[in-house]
Length: 288
Image (tube, rainbow, N blue to C red):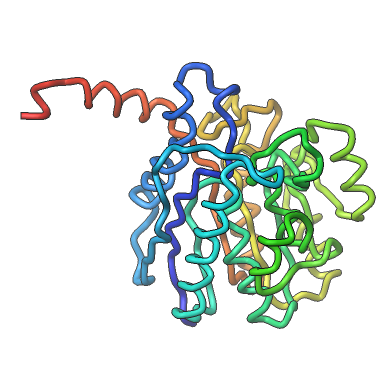
């Protein structure tokens, strides 16, 4: 199977400086870029071809059509799609970057497999915000909406397919942030499984996938789903999350039982490493 590792350090979809007070606005925003690089450094090396999506590091935040840095995100999405169409992979491992790094690869795979795909969205949040909500302009909170073909018309028009809501399952969800999001999930008919339901086994997820009859599975893994009492490696720190061993078991159980063609790991925010990087950059002896 033709498989690639896609390094996708997109940070523009986040607007998270207010929840990371120990870092300045630029460092917290661009933290996703460093977080992606560290994921790639730490991940086991394989024979997969590794390709990096070119991402601008210019800090020039502009909202358009209810989306922060929309024009930059649109260009980078086009670049990602161009890479995927050229490489024509059958399987993609994505290391990001904020949550929107799943949009281009997963819709590419949905198109490749003729919409015979189901999506497991492992995340503390549902990411079904819409630009028209006017409550939060970060595109990473709109990622699942975009995959369903909902949201900004210009961005949706360049995506190659969409995944219907009945083929999406939220896992680890525990923070809707706003009532309208909980209502929207109910309107869309998207089911969810809470962290406490995964303590003993992954049966509820496995059974849901079987019911969809989908032959190809996509997994989005947002690191903020992990319990902050055990590890803090994301911008979000919602209590009572999934333990590391539970998350590992869930993903392994899915891959052991089904054909997983896409996995993305997103939202790595290395707070301590950013502080360390800044300290090193201020040591004059290291610049000589």
